[in-house]
Length: 85
Image: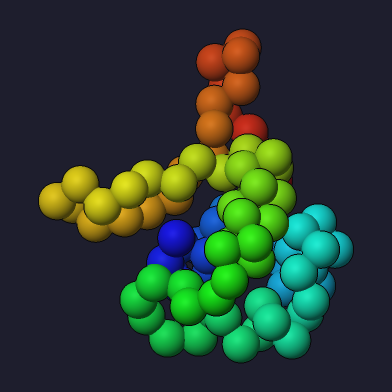
């Protein structure tokens, strides 16, 4: 996950840094330290896993680098509509 993906995922969900902290169990100071800048998140694997799990549980899909750049989008629900947050 990149720093840009983390910020974009929060934006898609309409989550504050505080909300992500609550959902992931990652401290607010850690999230504030991780988000600024560009490039890959430089943190412990456990922290990265907690952030990704919380965002994915809320409906975020992480799109890997595939020549068009890494990104995020919201998962479509079973009824074919997009989750709205």
